[in-house]
Length: 256
Image (cartoon, rainbow, N blue to C red):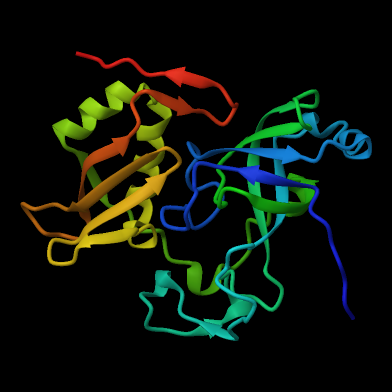
């Protein structure tokens, strides 16, 4: 049987490349996003009463999963890449049908936004521009299963220690983005091996990650060279203007 679906909207997030995206929803509460629903009267009506809920499910398409082919077995990074599991026993995007499901927190809903309704959410783990197929309210009595067994993903998520160089702190002040530090810290402390971007220097394990209008690099602690101790070096960004998800242009003034 074949089915054809049309997207009802897209998700806008700071994550414009796959590197640096949280590996699961809800792990990084500081990761904000906006679900932009198509500007159609029926879809606006379909969102009625959604504001009564605190969370929702996003049914989406892995639109940049690397090709149309899928893999029956994958090596989850959480298992160190040494063990294979069936793709249907994982959250990998390389699936028979590249469809994903994420639970996020609802921050606010603007049904009258220009160009179509907007649902502002937090805890996102999606690439910017991800197509949305459906939205469903999260209902705790049906969706929360405290006795569930997490299988090979049962082990606690490893956290690392993250430090900021003075240069990074100075740039954060100039950017006037208090949310940025929280998001960077939450993402990298959870599991930096999941977020490794472009390797700038293989010998020193220096990595670069672009997020929205801001790029940053980090490395292992040079004093310990331990993989569980990271140092955030500095950022590359335009200090003239930064565009927030709400579409506002903000002039950034240098801080002495």
